[in-house]
Length: 67
Image (cartoon, rainbow, N blue to C red; front, side, top):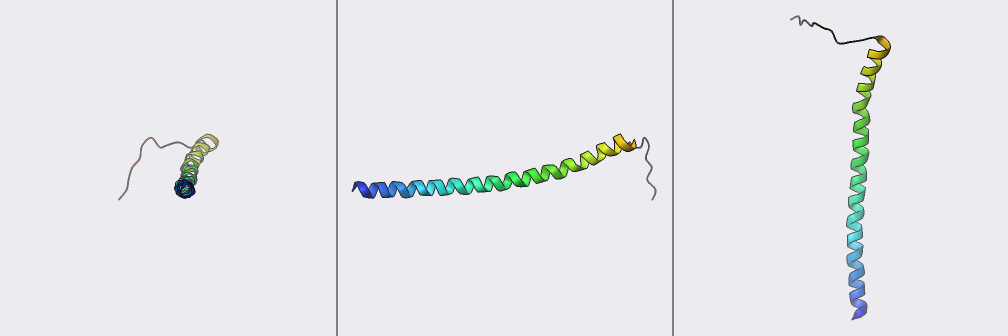
C-alpha cells in the first residue's frame, strides 16, 4: 500500500513539474517577444536623437498643409 501512494505522489509531482515547466517556457517566449518589441521601439527614438544631435534637425515651428 505504501508503494502505491509513493507512485501516486510521484506522478502528481511530475504533473506539477510539467505544468510549471510549460509556464516557464511560455514566460521565456513572452520575455523574448517583449525584448524584441522594446528594441524596435527604442530604435526609432535613437534615430530621432541622432538626427537632432548630429544633423541639427528640429521640429518645424509652423506647418501648413496644402490640399
